[in-house]
Amino acid sequence: MLPGLSYPEESLKRLAGDLAERFHGVFATETVERYVLESYTGLLRTSSVKAHLTTRTARFSRERLTALAQAKGAIERAVPEVLFVCEQNAGRSQMAAVFTNVLSGGAVHVRSAGSMPSSELDPTMVAVMTELGLSLDESFPKPLTDDVVQAADVVITMGCGDACPIYPGKRYVDWKLVDPAGQPIDEVRRIRDQVKANVIEMLADLKVSPAV
Image 1 (cartoon, rainbow, N blue to C red):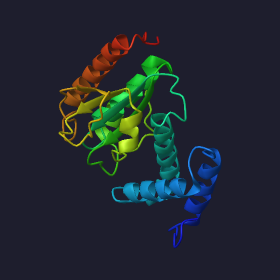
Image 2: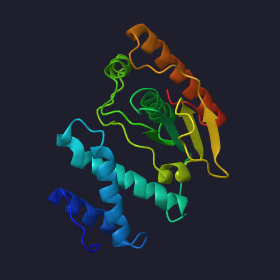
Image 3: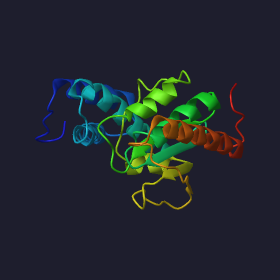
């Protein structure tokens, strides 16, 4: 354990231990501990539901460490890695991630993040996705971090300005989409359908046939 390191919750200490074991031989224990605390702090700044914070920290920390390991070549990238970035990670990028997961049938691995993440998902966005039978129960806004950008083959931005770091060799694409926040439900449905169309086009560009 890092000198003087204190955990705000005992569960975070257990999480760091579990992840240190999982990434043994890839990262030093100190690196894992730092990532857990950084991830917890990043989510704490915006989270309005503290009851799920430890669970979300576990997923966020694991995702970031996996991304960093991929970027360093310590873990193989078996499928294309796509990162969706919008400002709040509460609407457009979340819809794009869900559509990509479903339509690619696992042939693409997707992450999403926000340059200024919201506390929770946009409820109207959740409603219009639910209309299609698509669940966002496991989704939550996450801050944008360098590790997920470094691990991506394609970075797709949606109105996040210059917040996304630029790395040589990465492909960057900007989708001009209206922010669904505060929009009437019919407009959010239109945005949803445009996101889906963009995802289908992206998959074709990646030579991935959409799953039926």
